[in-house]
Length: 485
Image (tube, rainbow, N blue to C red; front, side, top):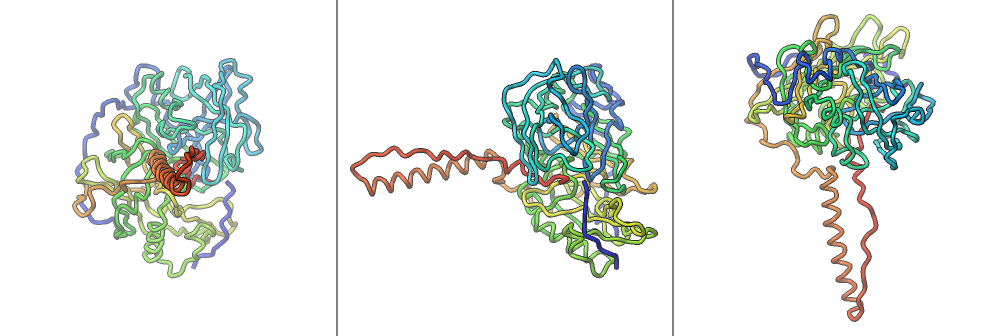
């Protein structure tokens, strides 16, 4: 049996089904390949290898902000929509954006606060010019929040000092009327409403001393960053990149859960989340199946819950003990699906500096209270295309998802969905802000009617004006995400 240590983080065979014959990549409206620059404003090939980072602390992009330009490293986050940078010194970061030094900075006169499950930040909202050195030959005027107060946002060991939210405007704070960075870039650079991302940290130590590479292609797809076909799944709702999960398999065996369990209350693709996060019921089933399928008879509960590391001698790697995990996504043809498969090398993750004579690993899957989140644990196995122009997310095999020349991820299809419900997304996910507002409004109306009836019964000869409930509806819960924290 392996050794176990407390977790301290400073910062089998494929399933049944016949893969499809190779498909020609569709030419989407508004979609440009990286080899076909749009309008001369962008050099897509220069964007290859423009990211640094790792799955434990996120992947970040170099940007120049203001006049004269100030260089910052910006975390790429597809699970939020605000562009924000450190605007004051902080003990965990080495630089920040000094708005007073920029002659082109303009304040908008209001603050914004963004809250997460385990952290938050508050910043002044303004606008300034931004240059992305790798890929664009001009600057762009964008909205930017300069963070002057934060809690558990900038953490020890991080190498970035800002965050680039690439989700839809519906998630932008304080409101969707604040134009997002990518919307501004699409309009000013005249690039297609598409971006793609490759994260190259598969099998490498989490939170190590070095950094791994990656690519963020703003405006298209770079053919050298993927192999084989691109498989697309529809975006169900344009806020997060919400998609539809149909089935999970462990070692080729289905969990046999109602498909709505996988999408309760949403399933999203989020580069700002470290792990594969699963709703509690799904997580429990996955842990049971992995433990049953693995070749290790007894395993500490602390490993599955994330409180302990599992350690082996330096001469041994544990990956052969664990099964493959497959996630089935609905295809653009709704009667078909495709599956993305991660090998143990992606979810049994090596940790840096845990011991001298042994290597220690963490479980790269964790429970979630509010979403199924396809985070870096899965994304590091694929080239992921966020095709906003055609409302879909694409997955393709990534050449950098290899260890010792062997791929650690697979993608295949199509498979029939005859045995799966036609819609696996819950009809009323009350975590959506609009539905919360509607629900509170209906409850308020019922409450007012009830109070009115009580007053009329007790005081039939007097007329009173009942004040409205002053409580402001708080939709912050829809933005609560378990991140790399």
